[in-house]
Length: 466
Image (cartoon, rainbow, N blue to C red):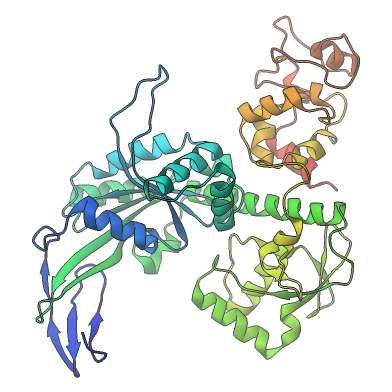
């Protein structure tokens, strides 16, 4: 096509015109099959090459994945078309259909989402390694993990358990549209998007394929929020806060940044190009709005030049976005938005905890130190608060020699876990005996008094208490 040629693309029931030398000619809609296009060879490869079809800021993890096993080690025949991850750490399950999607396509996708939801961070790294290997790129686990974390930060088990579903097809039945609308709204609140692809033949004989969001309609997407979607936003916000706290804590603890160091705001692709542009324009009107100074304070490490007040990195970024655009941004990774004159972000400066790889257990150690005598907490609730799962938490306890007050952690029924050992103290009493000395009562079944159990909400407050 010449430079004077353009394609006008609309939404569902769109009209597409080929514009040449100022004259618009209707393009003829055809099926992908009629165009000689195949599902795996073409549509799937387009999605892999252009993951924005699945939504903004999606990284492809794998395709044609069938590595599922039952509890007895038997392989299943299910094959997932495409799996990605958003820049917020939420898995994205994509089911592709070259032409019209069947009435049960949403059920098929839900089945895959349920399988994917059981993935651990190590599973995600492994499937990405395998995918890149299939594409003739060898990555060791450390390099694969770094590439993923450069995109979305440290993987959070709780978020992995709530994947987003994207269906991609040229046409959907009324049954599918009705089912997806029902699944997406109210208390059900599943995160499902319908993408429509359509092929067109131009008068020149050239082929054009469009991709547009059919459901939810983009103009009202933010209004279609049910209680469960609000919970997903809360999870994302919690992960953002945990990341920030870890980075700030490491910088202060290891004295990685001098007090008084000037910092400059840089926008990241966590937000749309429109928001980035509006923020930049707002700062250009008063450059002080984009400047801050590092200070030795856990609660307010950034002194904002615009008002002389102290803020946390994420809090200040959200405030700047709100002031410049009027938008309440649910999640940003604030420590990635502030950089020194050497172009190092706070996230870069914080790096990884000294001597550690993988999950950062510092928040656990900090939280455990705050559990008072006479109280107990469950593995599950602690895991939720620090952003992991009960199983790896229990495994960490077995080898941890800095887990203060570890005897104050029981299973969800208030029972002592099997295999409990004292890692530092030279003690012979049991976990139950240690708690009873502190005033925790146990019933005849060996279960601790639920009245003195710290809930996940209680633990969250403890974690915030500096």
